[in-house]
Image 1 (cartoon, rainbow, N blue to C red):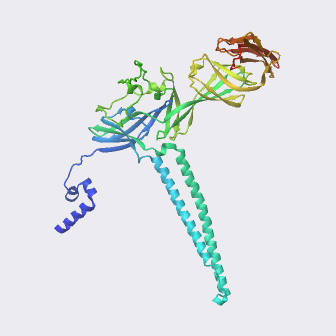
Image 2 (image 1 turned 90 degrees about the vertical axis):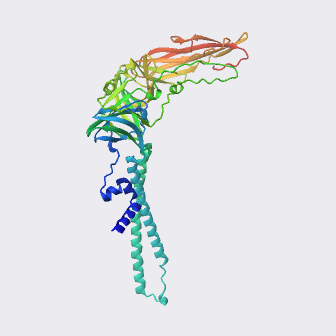
Image 3 (image 1 turned 135 degrees about the vertical axis):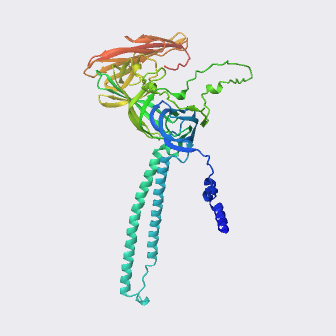
Length: 548
């Protein structure tokens, strides 16, 4: 009995060392109790409640509900953005527990989407490889059969009956091999298509499938078993939105319909499923610290490097610590961001609260989100610059546009139900009115012709005087009157020896600083209007003048 027990112990120590170290050999064999000083662990996924998407980055508000046992518990919260900023994590909630620590980590084995897609791709590739091997086997069988297909004559003992039997055999085998090859080729094609689809799906996921899974680990202390509700807020990178507009004008007598939309994107490593969105015009990436001016020193042949204690802060750098230690604080009711979410106009930003939940998968693909629709009171006017273009351009002039909180962006323009092109909306400009180009109107014809009889070059003492003349013609072929602004220019002298004299530009507003001439005109249906532009330039002899 002693020998048997000794052999048993030896076998146990040599082959079950891992089990021995975990459970304790004495407890297993003899019933002795050794206390195990280990922490309980709870794994639970965060449920995203609300996401505020900034122009760059996003704030994710999530919730976790679970139960912890008495003692110390490691709560591992999954479904956390891989791109979470560890320094932005805020924890609150309800429960008779104490937070002992908060830590953000990345689980390189926890990306379920990556695992499923890659496993499916590997299985499809394996099936394809097997089929390709079977195709080669069938081909080798056929080649071997054909290599032994030589049939000798009767002198070698082959009778007609033997010949018929051999022909039947070859026919049967070749048909069988050919049929099998055809089926295998079809399977190979189907499997190749399957592999391609999985590969395209992986590619469409962008960098998401290559990211580890984000996790937040909470160390909780509880005196007794307790239900816990954790509210989680953090900032995630690789997310944002940009404005895009649709501008529709039915005719020149109607208001402009403006559809304000957002292209929302995110590659945070988690899918946003059925969440409420708030789009904010704030941009945390710009930083909110006021810049400071420090003394600027100059010297001769020396360079002075000024070291300041706030230099790091001015650059907007943040420490990249991956762990935050929290002082033991009892969990209690915490304030929410309801006031921030529901506020449309705040002091530093405009927030658009989207009432309909959205699904936005990770991967960087753009999701279109409707923000607002406006009917804008507009006045319409045509603009033409015959010096550069013979067409007239219809524009809509919108006043009080700043109250619509428009950001700089691109707008698709539709006029009379037809797409006419794109235009840029510069929402950041401080102007009284917003001018939107609606495209060309071929029914208004502009022309600029040189007046040859006025064009001349004369010597005046030590100077040369050149005269220029142009005939500007406008024609309205429409059946309704139009308002049109025509623009032209005369050169501006940057040298006191060069003199420019405007001789004729009847009815124009003249900006002497820019040389710009502007005519505000009204053309009746089928009306032609002709305007003369004449000016002279005087400069010293022997000088080459640029810009004429």
